[in-house]
Length: 94
Image (cartoon, rainbow, N blue to C red):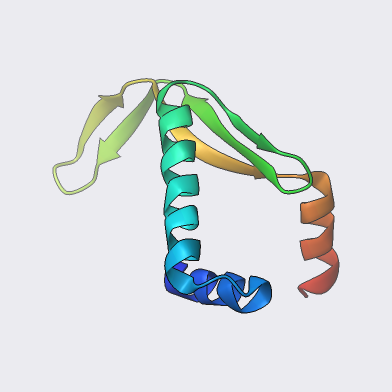
């Protein structure tokens, strides 16, 4: 499902025009990005959490040049689904 599909689906289910739904979806995504960039996690009960994960420093390999390189520790955004969301997916997708 693309963002356009999501906007169309929400518009159909709620009766709100697509332009308004698109503005809301864009605002939601912007707010999540701003929160994570400000080192603040976003928790949505029953759905999941947008969190910042820390990756430890590690050694990588450049196969084409047959060399090793050090990949520094860094942070990445991640999504952790709620238990009820995970269990729903496990029971419906086979």
